[in-house]
Length: 470
Image 1: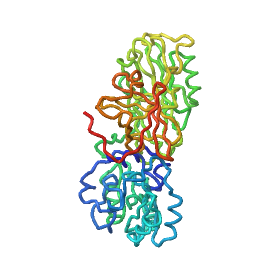
Image 2: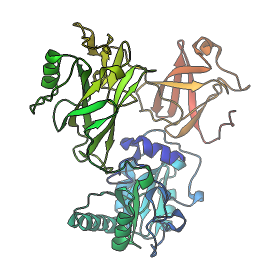
Image 3: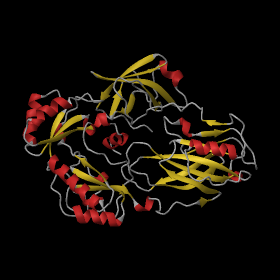
Image 4: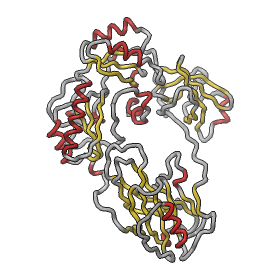
């Protein structure tokens, strides 16, 4: 994975500045016979007729290597993008700008005409600024018009797709959700040979389409209510009174299906999705005895670019008591547990409910009060300028190098030399071959201050490559 790919996957919009007006949702994209990568057009040239490439297969446009220098190195969003945009907007053929993270965070100014002439002017007028002129063979207005044509074509056929304008690749992305052969063929028929690319999931990896099942191994569906109740919540009922309370909490006003509380309990999964992708399905209720946890397997059948708003969906199932762990257990929405910021999703049951007619006493069913796991950043992550972060790294190869952080490698002379060299003040902070440092990024000049045990070491950005660490 390239450094630019790593950065884009983290989705730090403030650092990306520009590049795609509407980023597609994160998706697994595999080459297929319908969209081979070996015929993907070079986005710096005019497109030719042929199979539409996958978006992930297209390279990011860049300037010739000799346009770049070893300095400056930009480590956050301190590059003068506004100043360069004002300058470029006065020149003929300026289309857009983006940040080239493969080249020290330099500003790339895209020109559809005379980029070489603009490069000479940049070197003369802004010798201390990291900025290059990039020749492109498209106009942003044309890409935006193409995106509108794509939207109109699929909307008229009542087919939902996500789309965006990738100025960093000079194409319009068409997110098909799943790369079904018939959808790929339609896209090819409509827009083959134009500046478009495809994204989506390999059909072999997608969930099998089909209706909601009313029962599974040891469970049966009691309620399936879209847009109902709180999201990121779970709950359990073990008798009639707790069942009424559970239904009130889930805000279920429909019929009250019967539950045999001698042999069953009722479990509520307050699922969540984006409002643009409401088509979800409960496929199974899993009981993991080794982890003492009960969770739902819920799949999203839309696979498009989902909005970030919260759309709730209430599932309630009757689960056989005999399937429950014979002791305390937890209930959660999926195998991984709650996301950061939603610890209340997990319900903790401090009593054995696997026996017939067993009930919980007050306080024995509650939200998870376990403190959340500490959040650490590590090599390959992004941190914000001026905000301390806890950074964890192996000390196997010493502490001369940190990162990459913000797509930059960092180096200090305070821990140079032998591979196991670390500042003596940090020795007591090493646990199981790793150390956690409090790091603070500043940009004028770019520095990274790392602190442990009250001792700080300053790291500076470098274009040198760190040695391979075994």
